Amino acid sequence: FARWTPEEDKILLSAIERCGPVIVWSQVSACFPSRNSKSCRKRWIHSLDPTLRKGRWTKEEDVLLITAVETCGPQWFQVAKVLPGRTDDQCAKRWRENLDPSISRRPWTEEEDELLMETYEKIGKRWKDLASLFQGRPPVHCRNRVQSLVRARRRAVAAARKAAKAIVREDIGVDKEVTTTGLPLDSTAVVRMIIPSACCL
Image (cartoon, rainbow, N blue to C red):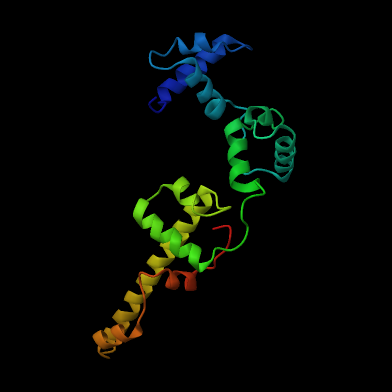
């Protein structure tokens, strides 16, 4: 299905209001020539429902989520029932990216960074495929680490260029000086000197 438009959202809200306390999704979807009941229900539950909670999770919510998963397992529809305002997708995402005890909390190693960047340069933003190479590193953690390393690499290049310009201005023989610095601009080693290998990146 295509993205929902603002006009479609207005129609959906009006149709739900007409239903009263009990939403009959087959009636709601009848207002849309290219949307079915499942699509309408998902749009309401995950985006338009005014009781939907967005933003940061509280400590209390995390405790409820952990307890629910221990009781129900990864049955996200059932888990979401004990967390008012949170959808099944939100619960699954919070668990997989933050609360799952199998997630690694240790800092990224130099070897991991090198493998991460080498693979990223080959396959691009296929975060699930990247994460499959690292035990305990969810896709979002791999994405965040790549973004941090890329930003740091850009800062390293910018700093090197600035230093080269300064050498030129001082008339010290820019070619010789820049060559003998041995700054590996495209290496992960330089990046790791600039940013910490925090496990949350």
